[in-house]
Image (tube, rainbow, N blue to C red; front, side, top):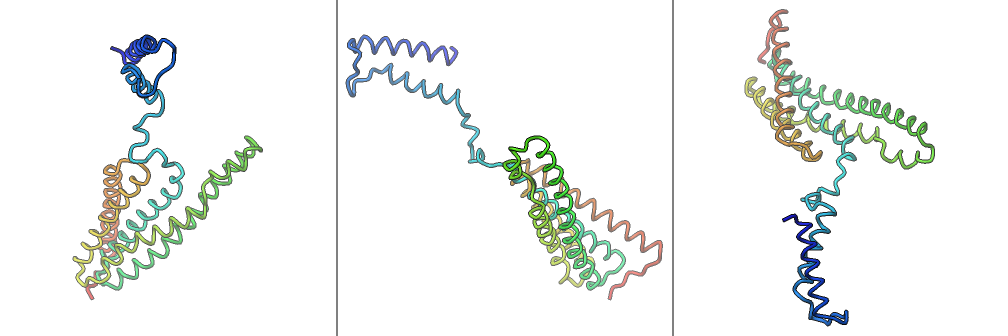
Length: 250
């Protein structure tokens, strides 16, 4: 039977029972008929069905505003991934033509500093351009709603800081993983291993904070990083072979 029809049948039965039990219309304390209890329970169930879905508050996610996180989360994830891939690829690429530890250390440090500055400036400029466009649109649409609408606009400074810090943090992983290892082969392997762990971790963390699929995001970021490192190593190795650049082991 349809749940709503069943509720109406029980409600009618309960009303009839209450009328016969209390003809004067007054209900004595502790003397509620069973039908009234059934009606009360089923009325609550109907109210819940018509109101908010309990699944909407599972794990406390109903109050999470993922859109508010989108701007700084995008900048942080992009910065961390870029730091990992750029510095690791740079170190591996230099290692393809120069096996010395100092060469890989200098290249990694240069990539960290230059990349963090580049990411910060790039994010600031791009987000500020988006900010200016949205402000202009708000002014054209509704002057009276301008103040409230400004609160939801992206913050260029926040995006720049998040991107720069994330890039530096991501770049530190391959840099620290390979700088203390004397053997060239072991150093390259350590850089690749640390970068792989970092890429998967940042991909999963970004998906978790953004409410996306963690496994798919982690694999996507990891495979992209592997591809970048492989291409960089191959191109630099080919460059060294074509131009007869000797690989030093000192």
